[in-house]
Image (cartoon, rainbow, N blue to C red; front, side):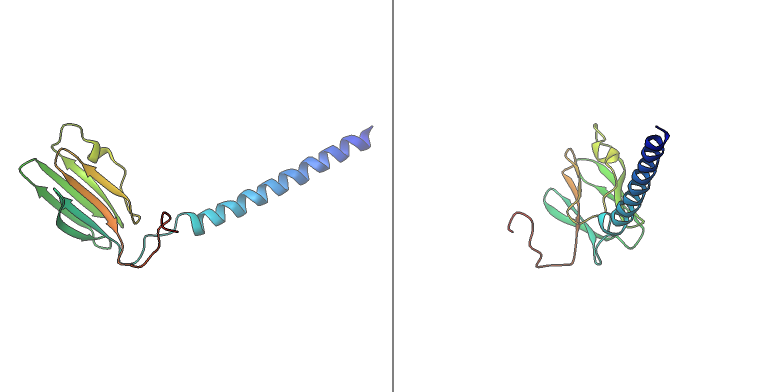
Length: 131
């Protein structure tokens, strides 16, 4: 009877070891491939009412104030990411939006007709829809 119990304990230890190794390898792969850094030459394209207002280099910490007849937004670039620091719009969705840093991400302030989109200098990529 004790032989069976020892065998079960040994199997449990081996299973735990394999699980820990698998989790460590998965974590390393996620760090290396899953959260790759922003692309070189990435910038934030700021448009107001569909027209380009500014291009902000993600490598330079910057604050700009965008004032229009609809209202004012303060945009902050820091650490390779962009966010709206403050705005006088009633809903504050743009202010509460998480910072963006990856190509294709955007922040929108509908009341002020403001769009901040992360773009890349890299051209000629095939997107998932056209593949």
